[in-house]
Length: 210
View (cartoon, rainbow, N blue to C red):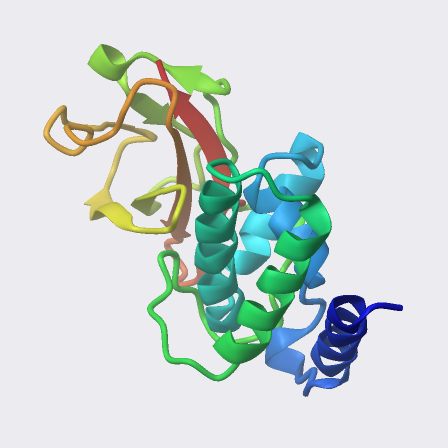
């Protein structure tokens, strides 16, 4: 084992051994997070990881690092293993950093896609939307439900945070998409404010701008 591989294994062990409190269970491992950020995982698993990332401060920072690492790797002729090493090192350093969450939710165990409340909104749009008619739609809750919609870029930079929506759709203004390029992927989530006072968040969905 060369020194770089040895260091990678050491960092991986540190990642696995860190505190797994009830609020931060089931962190994706560094390599899988990198693959998700690079778009190399199947869609369902990638969106599971995005669900977790949107609710976990540690992994939000790690996701951004993964995107930066991936962007740099496309500009240089390097093998994948050194970039996985670089990501693992960055993730370990990111643990404990204070970050904002693009999709904040109530404190508690992060829910993966199979654990979402049956009353949570469900996307009613496809994988792509035209820029000129970028309308997000979702399933309705009980009468009297209002909704909060959050939209972010792929690096989890917030684009829109709109509350008190009575309808089950929201047209995203062109001004919000002004700096978004054709082909860019956006993440979005709906939080239902139920008549009984409960707040139920949807999965995090990905949609590409045509």
